[in-house]
Length: 150
Image (cartoon, rainbow, N blue to C red; front, side, top):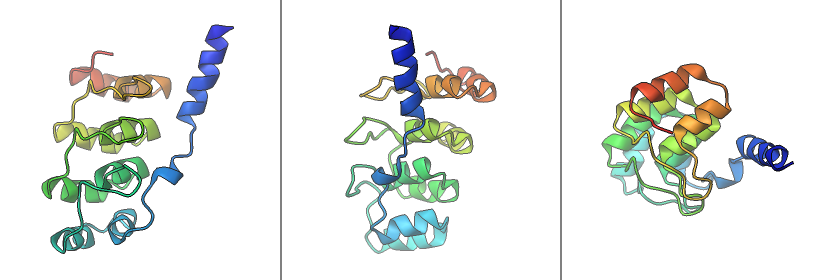
């Protein structure tokens, strides 16, 4: 009985609609969603912060969660912090990308130095756990070869 309840709760966590957590109100987010690194860079140069967001997710986390990989190098080069955690779930950009199944972004963040053994503060999940839950054995292999333990 406990296992069935746990499976249901885990299943719900994987299928959650994260849209309400995305920052839809800023020009920077619009540029992120449009996959426009030049506009992202221009807005940052004009004062947009790569560290703050109204909803607790940074622009890097929004890009990772939304699958907008084309702007991630620009955000990182502008000083976005790979290991910064959001205020709600305690997840890094890597954890947001893994939870959403954006494996191209997971690879990019890991190659840029993201900690593969990071755990979310609420659920305690790692990127490897998300890959296993989704049945993505290629990503399990990728993360394991880069030092993921659990």
